[in-house]
View 1 (cartoon, rainbow, N blue to C red):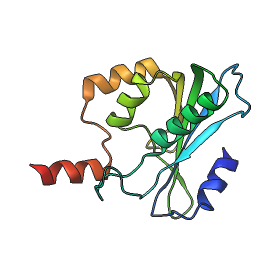
View 2 (tube, one colour):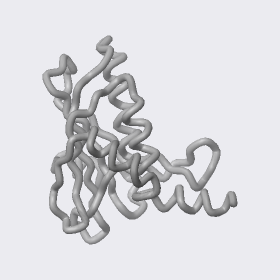
View 3 (cartoon, helix red, strand yellow):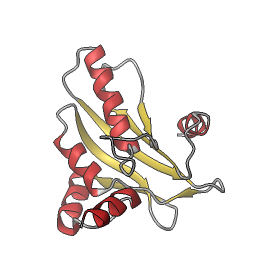
View 4 (cartoon, rainbow, N blue to C red):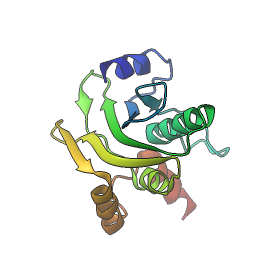
Length: 154
Protein backbone atom coordinates (compact mmCIF):
# COMPACT_ATOMS: atom_id res chain seq x y z
CA UNK A 1 0.00 0.00 0.00
CA UNK A 2 2.85 2.40 0.83
CA UNK A 3 4.35 1.82 -2.63
CA UNK A 4 1.09 2.84 -4.33
CA UNK A 5 0.74 5.93 -2.10
CA UNK A 6 4.28 7.01 -3.01
CA UNK A 7 3.54 6.53 -6.73
CA UNK A 8 0.42 8.66 -6.32
CA UNK A 9 2.33 11.49 -4.68
CA UNK A 10 4.87 11.54 -7.51
CA UNK A 11 2.44 11.42 -10.45
CA UNK A 12 1.99 15.20 -10.60
CA UNK A 13 -1.83 15.50 -10.64
CA UNK A 14 -2.11 16.48 -6.99
CA UNK A 15 -5.26 18.55 -6.72
CA UNK A 16 -6.08 18.12 -3.07
CA UNK A 17 -6.93 14.66 -1.83
CA UNK A 18 -4.77 11.83 -3.08
CA UNK A 19 -7.16 8.93 -3.64
CA UNK A 20 -5.80 5.56 -4.70
CA UNK A 21 -7.53 2.29 -5.49
CA UNK A 22 -5.83 -1.07 -5.83
CA UNK A 23 -7.09 -4.45 -7.04
CA UNK A 24 -5.25 -7.40 -5.51
CA UNK A 25 -6.04 -10.52 -7.58
CA UNK A 26 -6.66 -13.81 -5.78
CA UNK A 27 -4.85 -16.75 -7.43
CA UNK A 28 -4.69 -14.99 -10.76
CA UNK A 29 -2.52 -15.66 -13.80
CA UNK A 30 -1.80 -11.91 -14.08
CA UNK A 31 1.90 -11.05 -14.12
CA UNK A 32 1.41 -8.19 -11.64
CA UNK A 33 0.55 -8.80 -8.00
CA UNK A 34 -1.75 -5.75 -7.98
CA UNK A 35 -3.32 -3.23 -10.35
CA UNK A 36 -3.85 0.35 -9.18
CA UNK A 37 -5.47 3.60 -10.22
CA UNK A 38 -5.54 7.20 -9.01
CA UNK A 39 -8.11 9.97 -9.03
CA UNK A 40 -7.56 12.62 -11.66
CA UNK A 41 -8.78 16.13 -12.32
CA UNK A 42 -8.84 15.56 -16.09
CA UNK A 43 -12.10 16.32 -17.86
CA UNK A 44 -14.43 13.46 -18.63
CA UNK A 45 -17.17 13.52 -21.26
CA UNK A 46 -16.21 17.13 -22.18
CA UNK A 47 -17.50 18.29 -18.80
CA UNK A 48 -15.18 20.08 -16.39
CA UNK A 49 -17.22 18.99 -13.34
CA UNK A 50 -16.86 15.22 -13.83
CA UNK A 51 -13.49 13.74 -12.95
CA UNK A 52 -12.07 10.23 -13.01
CA UNK A 53 -12.34 8.35 -9.73
CA UNK A 54 -9.54 6.07 -8.57
CA UNK A 55 -11.75 2.96 -8.61
CA UNK A 56 -12.70 3.46 -12.25
CA UNK A 57 -9.11 4.15 -13.28
CA UNK A 58 -8.04 0.94 -11.50
CA UNK A 59 -10.86 -0.95 -13.25
CA UNK A 60 -9.72 0.37 -16.64
CA UNK A 61 -6.13 -0.65 -15.87
CA UNK A 62 -7.35 -4.12 -14.86
CA UNK A 63 -9.31 -4.41 -18.12
CA UNK A 64 -6.13 -3.56 -20.01
CA UNK A 65 -4.11 -6.18 -18.09
CA UNK A 66 -6.77 -8.84 -18.69
CA UNK A 67 -6.87 -8.05 -22.41
CA UNK A 68 -3.07 -8.08 -22.59
CA UNK A 69 -2.81 -11.56 -21.05
CA UNK A 70 -6.09 -12.84 -22.57
CA UNK A 71 -7.83 -13.43 -19.26
CA UNK A 72 -11.62 -13.28 -19.17
CA UNK A 73 -12.19 -12.42 -15.52
CA UNK A 74 -10.35 -12.07 -12.24
CA UNK A 75 -11.35 -12.46 -8.60
CA UNK A 76 -9.83 -9.69 -6.53
CA UNK A 77 -9.95 -7.65 -3.35
CA UNK A 78 -10.36 -3.89 -3.70
CA UNK A 79 -8.36 -1.53 -1.47
CA UNK A 80 -9.23 2.19 -1.43
CA UNK A 81 -7.30 4.79 0.53
CA UNK A 82 -7.08 8.55 0.61
CA UNK A 83 -4.29 10.77 1.87
CA UNK A 84 -5.10 14.35 2.87
CA UNK A 85 -2.89 17.39 2.30
CA UNK A 86 -1.42 17.10 5.78
CA UNK A 87 -0.34 13.49 5.11
CA UNK A 88 -3.00 11.68 7.16
CA UNK A 89 -4.92 8.69 5.82
CA UNK A 90 -8.59 9.65 5.75
CA UNK A 91 -12.01 8.13 5.10
CA UNK A 92 -12.49 6.62 1.66
CA UNK A 93 -15.07 4.37 0.07
CA UNK A 94 -16.56 3.94 -3.40
CA UNK A 95 -19.35 6.34 -4.30
CA UNK A 96 -22.70 5.13 -5.65
CA UNK A 97 -21.67 5.57 -9.30
CA UNK A 98 -18.41 3.66 -8.85
CA UNK A 99 -20.20 0.88 -6.97
CA UNK A 100 -22.60 0.47 -9.90
CA UNK A 101 -19.78 0.23 -12.41
CA UNK A 102 -17.79 -2.19 -10.24
CA UNK A 103 -20.73 -4.52 -9.67
CA UNK A 104 -21.67 -4.62 -13.37
CA UNK A 105 -18.11 -5.21 -14.57
CA UNK A 106 -17.54 -8.50 -16.35
CA UNK A 107 -13.78 -8.32 -15.88
CA UNK A 108 -13.60 -8.48 -12.10
CA UNK A 109 -15.48 -10.20 -9.30
CA UNK A 110 -14.73 -8.34 -6.08
CA UNK A 111 -14.59 -10.47 -2.95
CA UNK A 112 -13.73 -7.96 -0.19
CA UNK A 113 -13.58 -4.19 0.01
CA UNK A 114 -10.98 -2.55 2.27
CA UNK A 115 -11.38 1.16 3.02
CA UNK A 116 -10.77 3.71 5.78
CA UNK A 117 -13.79 4.74 7.85
CA UNK A 118 -14.40 8.13 9.51
CA UNK A 119 -12.30 7.18 12.54
CA UNK A 120 -9.35 6.42 10.20
CA UNK A 121 -9.39 2.67 10.79
CA UNK A 122 -9.22 0.10 8.02
CA UNK A 123 -12.56 -1.58 7.54
CA UNK A 124 -13.07 -4.84 5.67
CA UNK A 125 -16.48 -5.66 4.23
CA UNK A 126 -17.74 -8.26 1.81
CA UNK A 127 -18.47 -6.47 -1.48
CA UNK A 128 -21.94 -8.03 -1.77
CA UNK A 129 -22.82 -6.54 1.63
CA UNK A 130 -21.46 -3.18 0.44
CA UNK A 131 -23.68 -3.42 -2.67
CA UNK A 132 -26.74 -4.14 -0.54
CA UNK A 133 -25.96 -1.20 1.76
CA UNK A 134 -25.54 1.11 -1.23
CA UNK A 135 -28.76 -0.13 -2.84
CA UNK A 136 -30.68 0.70 0.33
CA UNK A 137 -29.14 4.14 0.84
CA UNK A 138 -28.51 5.18 -2.82
CA UNK A 139 -27.74 8.81 -1.89
CA UNK A 140 -24.80 8.35 0.46
CA UNK A 141 -21.17 9.10 -0.29
CA UNK A 142 -21.63 10.91 -3.58
CA UNK A 143 -18.52 12.81 -4.49
CA UNK A 144 -18.41 16.59 -4.45
CA UNK A 145 -18.18 16.86 -8.25
CA UNK A 146 -21.25 14.71 -8.89
CA UNK A 147 -23.19 16.72 -6.33
CA UNK A 148 -22.18 20.04 -7.95
CA UNK A 149 -23.02 18.75 -11.42
CA UNK A 150 -26.43 17.43 -10.34
CA UNK A 151 -27.43 20.63 -8.55
CA UNK A 152 -26.62 22.81 -11.56
CA UNK A 153 -28.73 20.73 -13.92
CA UNK A 154 -31.91 21.23 -11.87
